[in-house]
Image (cartoon, rainbow, N blue to C red; front, side):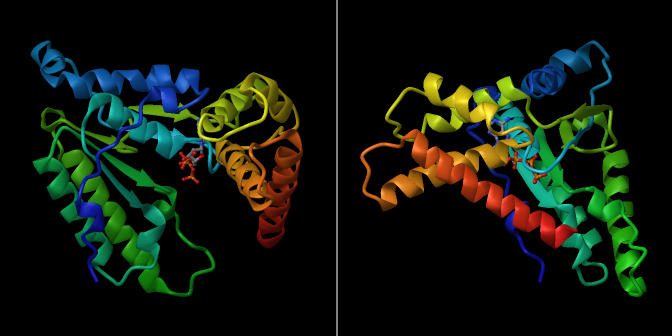
Length: 257
Ligand code: ATP
């Protein structure tokens, strides 16, 4: 039952260039990159090393991407695990998994431990008759806190999020942010006009869209064009792709409400 997947650190080739917009977040997170690259420089001066950053924001806004870019920029291993997975776990397994993950992380320090949806571990479910679940969550959370507190800064592990020295807000992109994100994803597709032509037009039509939605639009447009054997992607394909992605978002909202 205990998957070893998360015990193997990944290497990340992503850099800040792959993350469009989020300029303030990048500035805030640069401190972690500097530390991960040269931990001695900080510890020699007796500086308190920041241990954890809490990245807060709506789904699909680039939190995972940013954490991976920090790993890529710093050239350190990246561990990731999802808080929501623990909710489904058999008693005792969550805490055990956290212990194993951090043991491996310590052996490979400096590194990044990224915990997605950490709120799922902390949350208590009011509707839950299943006491076991809440206890399991508490056990997992306690183990996580023990691991985070027990880590001396000198062991060179940065948690994202951890016992948080920094909270980094990551919001939905504004029109310029959307155009920049579109350009990142337009690099990978073949279009009939330049990205300077398409990106601002699509950005103007997509208020409220996340980076993930915009990446989706680019991919959908390429799929639509390829279905009709087109040699390149045109505005019409992007329009159809936007309709498709908007349709998907509406469906998701209906399920939620
Ligand atoms: P979740 O909370 O759902 O886990 P997240 O904030 O971690 O979401 P990511 O997984 O980082 O979001 O983003 C999903 C995908 O959306 C990325 O892999 C990337 O393709 C695209 N994306 C999101 N934000 C950006 C951005 N700022 N620049 C470029 N691409 C982005």
